[in-house]
Length: 390
Image (cartoon, rainbow, N blue to C red; front, side, top):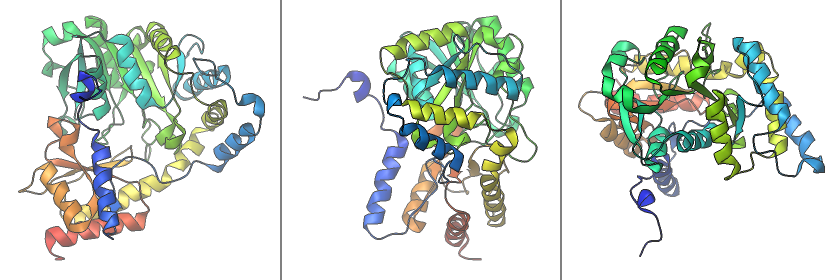
């Protein structure tokens, strides 16, 4: 008899765990696998962040529990970062909460806001963790279809008035995973107007807000007037500072949502290791120019891979942000059949678009998380297999 809840038994396995199992089998068979699946930057954090962690790790006074809401120094640094970057004022005590990575924050946020049976509006395609979080609280998912014809921006006419009236929570995500789509302030203005009208809480997942290219600068949801009445924004140092394994993030905005989440988390965890929080503070104190410098390599990889994919005949758009390219599957394949064949035939891991929702069918996602020469080799393998080296 299995010792697991009905919720867990009915939960599909996390996509990337399945992919990693297949990868390991191929490696054990001696295959050279190029993994462009999971979105984990291969580049290290800047040296000043590592040095800051090392310095504080040697202070034995800091090897204790953190305050539940995160140390005051980091909460103040987040507030200052928003003031400096977006001209948004935040109360570090009431409107800022430190997270053990934004993935943890997303799931616990849903638990803090949503009751069983409540409706939650999720982008489709979208990050699979949103759906899993709703599943855990036995909520009801309402999908917001996003498509290339509208540049993957929300069309609120796609959601019925009844679903809007009954929805408790809405997730947005720009720059977007998996599509790489970006938003202008107008996108958030329309979302806030709709959310205020129907009394829906907006959670903007801004995990890639500073992984942007050229002259594009991602706006914040909280720059919109009245956004704090209905909205929160989740930030992460994982992608912005190449700190994925450090598990450090934050949520800012509506104080009632922040305090509800803080109450839940105080009964579940005691925040992150204090030296990691102090290193995160150091990271956030850097200038916008220094932050953008971190992502120059990612932009170069994006441009090179985009050019090679176009040359090989793939339909793909250049992106202004994230660490992904969203590519049309060749004719004759589904997303899943194509990615399975790519793995079996040329030992390259890419993610099927269908894993992100029904609207992702017909696409696959490439993560730009290996050195440029490996990206070049991966596209060459795809080209040779699809086009026969022509």
